[in-house]
Length: 610
Image 1: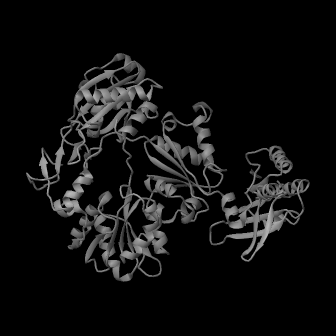
Image 2: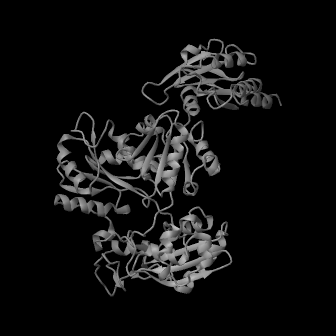
Image 3: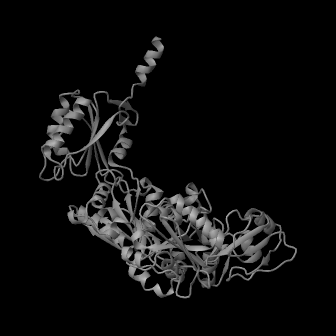
């Protein structure tokens, strides 16, 4: 089967940096129904206000937002240049002068940039400065077909681009993608072909497949993905349908987490669409092979056939009735016109997003993208606030400190409804954060405090974040250069005796120790006890780092010795790193730096002695 990666793109954002461009920016934002982001202290506030243009534009681009900047083109180029890598996945970046006199797609026409530029140009009554070969010669972005069409794999796009650059038009063999009205030239060096059938790759031909078909699937629990793939390949070949002519894979919601079905949708590069048993059973009169056995097991008389018809629409017909193997079933429905938006709901997604200390330049592009793709955000209010502009306008559900289980349960249940939910955590979601609790809820039985069956079928994905211990270490040198451990001193969820036992073990093992949650308003003694236990096994002058509010304007770093560690200097926002007996402080021109050597000096001494 053809494997294609489908990358979502967040909605475009209009940026305005100068009061002289405010009117133009507002008109563009209104035409696109897009949010207007304005430079603080310079421009009348829009939907979002930002302080630094380069950082703001870079954050939006990393999150997958198209950027329409009413500003100098150079500002946008400098902002996104460090992130450029693949034109096929990068969002559009468009520059517009303050006067609105022209519209300039800066990164070419990919990902709808030329279409977006022309839409803006039409709304302002000006011209778009389009430079891509296909658009100039034919008025169409040939590598980005209209909705409901798909470019065949291994198409002759490079040959086509060369031909267009040489001024050669194209001839259309068969029906062109419906919105296009392309010129014909019997002597063209490159042919455009629109067909639902499989084709043999050719360097002089560009093939478009109208996505009129939906693949309905069913399977036994734990069916072999390879067996499913073989069945699909066989059925498509017999039906003479190209894999790219499929618009979706569809099944009953009970199979939302079935590996064989998920693998099929992933390899085909099409969305998965889900239906309740009741929705599918309502189509029993239209299916070819209703089954009482299936109804008794699933609650619908048909899965594969009914799902294919449901996703393809009310006018669709079965072109391949149910084909079955011992563990899988498959059917194909065909709609009379290309399907741009298949019916049904998607599989829910819960993204565990670690945002690090909150600084945008310490947040990974993947974390930003997960936030941009999310339908809604869940988390402690401060953490969501730290996301800044990429969270603007998204529905959010704020939960207080202490409401962690409610927070995770809510996020899972929302995802169970087919939503894309981002659960926002500071640091890394898997380090003293919500990741473990999410999996604990998924692992619990329903009658012992678990979540619904729908929530258990969602996709859970994780974007790693910079943890407090990493941030503290980076700021202070390399204290984690050798073996280390992390211990939370909070006894809200962990028995105090367990915490004490772990501190003793870390002391005896001479680990560098990162203490999380070192104190609270009511808990002030355990850190002092930890200090005294560590002093039994390492020198009094062992370096200690007190790191508070890392990565934020109020960041504060203090270097102490273990003997001088004073609990009154520590608050809830402080991470405490205690060095091992081997840790050292290097006095450098820029100030002292802590490091824990791994033993390279001993190795060098041994090499010299030998």
